[in-house]
Amino acid sequence: MNPMLLSIENVSKVFSSSGRRVAALDNVSLTIAAGETLGLVGASGSGKSTLSRILLRLLSADAGAIRFEGEDWLALSGAPLRRKRARMQMVFQDPLAAFNPLATVAMVLDDPLRIHELVPRERRGGEIAMLLDRVGLPADFASRPVRALSGGQRQRVAIARAIATRPSLLVLDEAASALDVTVRGRILELLVDLQKERGIACLFISHDLAVVRAVSHRIAVIDGGRIVETGPAAAVIAAPQSDAGRALVAAVPRLMTEAL
Ligand SMILES: Nc1ncnc2c1ncn2[C@@H]1O[C@H](COP(=O)(O)OP(=O)(O)O)[C@@H](O)[C@H]1O
Ligand SMILES: [Mg+2]
Image (cartoon, rainbow, N blue to C red; front, side, top):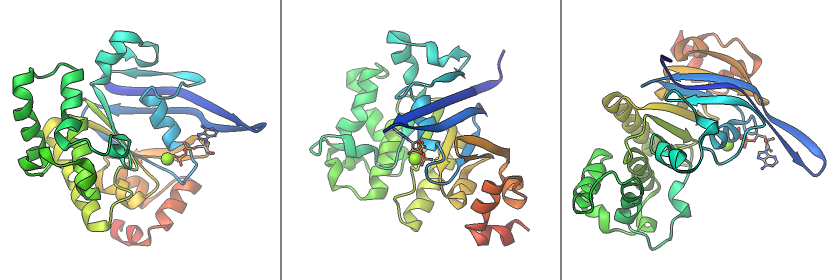
């Protein structure tokens, strides 16, 4: 039995645009255990979103393999892939932006419950109220249009939608980056609570090491499409081993003293 929930093995991706080749990912390997939060941190353009898009099967890899819950994730297609998608959910920077502006919170949350046939129709209203409660929003938010919500409230709805299908893994790509500091802190607390309570593993992606540190058990640093170091969060912050890791720590000077 493979104890790893997710293992990414030697994944590579090259983009060609206007005659230039960009190696967005170069032999990336990472693992995430059940219930673990792995922080992936790197400067803008280092390949983070390319990896999240490959993981979510929105983009194909040129090479490499991904195992998820014991299956060959990149080989899945059709109905088995659709079923398995319930187990790996995503939260991006503004995930609700893609919705019809007239959509209500209830519509956004009903979608995954209906598509994945998780809850019979007559119980969906109750399930939506439970999901809202879990992310700290009042039940009467169900009837509000999504566009009437603040950034923090929208992100709570996005998290509720992501956990609706009872995933084992959440992929969060700059999920807290657009929020102001106070709201961001509360969203990170919510994620840590959910992660403990439900045992959901997270791949938490950000360019900001201070944010990554607040939620991660382990941290991987990516630079120019390569993983340049991986270790326990406290160790990477106290003594980064790579140039990119040192630069990220130096960008948040407060971290240096707190770690001493
Ligand atoms: N669709 C694409 N076509 C061409 N180049 C791309 C495309 N997507 C990403 N890239 C390039 O791949 C590299 C990694 O991008 P990305 O994964 O978005 O980085 P990050 O999320 O860390 O900021 C960058 O050099 C970016 O310009
Ligand atoms: Mg990105």
